[in-house]
Amino acid sequence: MTIAFPGGPTRWPLPDEDVRAALLACYASGDWGRYDGANTTALTASLQNTFQREHVQLCSSGTIAVELALRGLRVGAGDEVILAAYDFPGNFRAIEAVGARPVLVDIAKDRWTIDVQQLAAAISPATKAVIVSHLHGDLADIEAICQLAKERNLQVLEDACQVPGAMISGRPIGSFGDASVLSFGGSKLLTAGRGGAVLTSQADVAQRIRVFSSRGNEAFPLSELQAAVLLPQMAKLAEYTRIRAESAIQLRYALRDLAELSPVAQTSDLMAYYKFAWRYLPAGGDAQLDCRHPTRDGLICQLQAQGIDVGAGFRGFNKRSTNRCRIASDLTNAQSAAETTLLLHHPILLQPDAIETLADAVRKVIAGQR
Ligand SMILES: Cc1ncc(COP(=O)(O)O)c(C=O)c1O
Image (tube, rainbow, N blue to C red; front, side, top):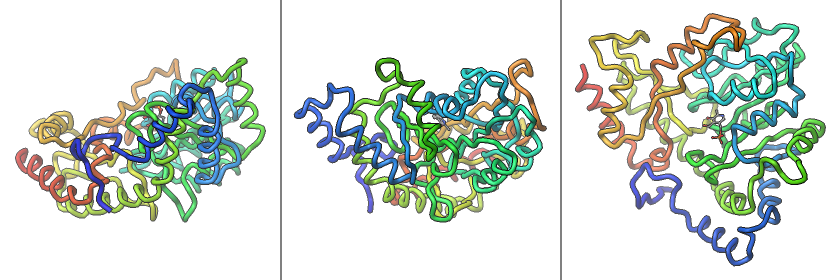
């Protein structure tokens, strides 16, 4: 299946007749002006089914979903929450927002997700939870982390904002954590411009989130209109995930000889790509930036000038003050990720016919720098 891109291969969201029909139906029914109704009910059911969860709390963003999940897990003042020193910035802030203290550990070598050994070593009597983010197509070792958490009496908050549709051993990512979160932000794989959700199988966690969110009205709502446009996207998620995953395999293969770009590894049989990550190693294997070669940011500018939708990764937390957090391990890998990560945005992965052209353009830019 090849999808038409009238606005070019980086346009997002895609033109989608089913979304258009949903918007028109909302207009005709008046649902666009309602607090909630059939669309939010159907979206809740669809998420329950897709992510194998009993409870779904729709909300206004992935950022607030993380905070709600922490509250649902009863994390508060005096508690520690471990997270990777390379992560979405809002996750650090969400821990602070509930009055808890972030604890930083490194990511695994040559990956973008938390190092399980470092995580185990960082647990203290005050540690209540760990945030595990699946980032840039790299799926964290979530099964091992859930096992460790069970043994050490920790709660797992699984951040699946970047990877809806991915599976490990046939089980959906987003079904592993004591609570898991999704984002429906404007650039995301499932988008309503804004929006998010917390998923859990624990009735008490769901109940605490409901109580916190309910202030006579919903404090962090997702509207009927937003739910209406998400429903047709849910129906296409599995198919689009498969196409993006195949394109990623094709892209990795096409650029396999390029020593300067080290791609995200395939660690499961079904990966999901909101971003496809590389580490840029200009000296051909050395993570240190070499002044004789252009920097990562220079490379990004050159690729963007060729119309390739790339950007830098997160800045990481390795420079955060110890007034704000406990630093529990050496953070070398997180620092390297912050300095060398190059991210390809996902829309082009839905266009398998464009991958060879993309690879040629990347190869040409890199060759021009040698
Ligand atoms: C890993 C991760 N968590 C949380 C979020 C927050 O989602 P939102 O933009 O919906 O607030 C993002 C957004 O990019 C993200 O990448």
